[in-house]
Length: 243
Image (cartoon, rainbow, N blue to C red; front, top):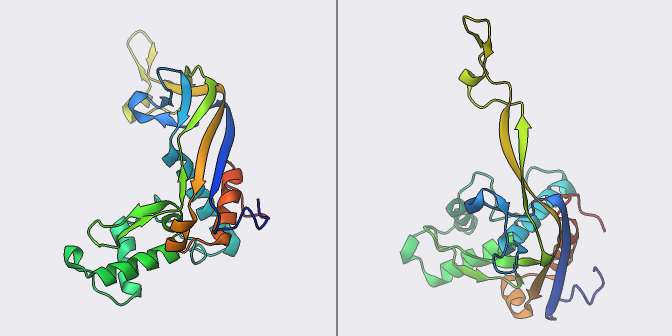
């Protein structure tokens, strides 16, 4: 996937992503007790596009930390949508600070928004890859990314299992207290019951698209595309970047 033709950002790319799951939960549904997502009409398993992008983001973030051994990822490879405790508006403010501009919210000049948008594309891998809406509070504009991915759907119907498990970690302190009643019987919890949902086996297929026109607008280059191909193959393991 690192040959010039696959990393040519002047070409349109259409790709298929296949991955299988064995005794695991590829994408739990929080509205259904974290059960694996399914299409109720076909009983095919589903994995959302944002779940796949999350894995790509996490791999790139981890790999770029490993690549330079620093606290911050390499330049151009920071991740915008990241559970790092920093609000998105604070990341927008980074652009204005770096450009010596003042954020004016809804009264921001169009050329200043354009400068902030360009800075965000240059510094955040996922902004220039997938796009972002950055008009909240500190206005850094909107970006249409060149990479888009569909939901993944299992090729065959799946049968999710919701299994009972026992855990030795008691939740509340009072439950862990052992009390002996008058008859000498000890009362108190030593274990608690839980649930675990899995897919016994499923082969999933997703489709993706790369638009060279949007890549030119965001500054997405051949190195970015090569990194994305590696992320698709290694995002399940969160390993370092390897050629």
